[in-house]
Image (tube, rainbow, N blue to C red; front, side):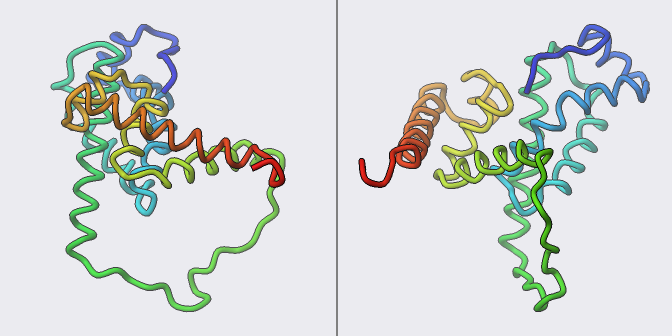
Length: 189
């Protein structure tokens, strides 16, 4: 998540959003939503958009109780997101999976334009993150996509700072091996 660059200071924007200013809330949404979607594509790839909506509903409901700065907001925001992702995972374990009917849910093929090339790179990075063990993927995504510090990440995932550092280190090391293997030509491996 990028650093706050809104037209008003972060605290003023949160106060205005808390008071019901739709423009202020829209500024918060434009700032935090892209990182939320990327993170959800790592930890809950099947329910990202719906889950993001639930996160924002929870943010709206809890905004009056939020106190703090930009970094506090990030930690609070991704704690909410993680709780919604855990709830979704529990729900899916209790419900049987549905199978799409042949041909009904098939996506329409489309040509990848230059405008989508950047999105293709993001999708490739997210696919790499998904290849990690789930706890490593979650920690790396919170550190890299959400921009949380080690202490903030440890609060969100409910683990010690040392455990977060270790999970992140192992995850990044695994990703480096995957990317390094792709960059070495076939004859030189």
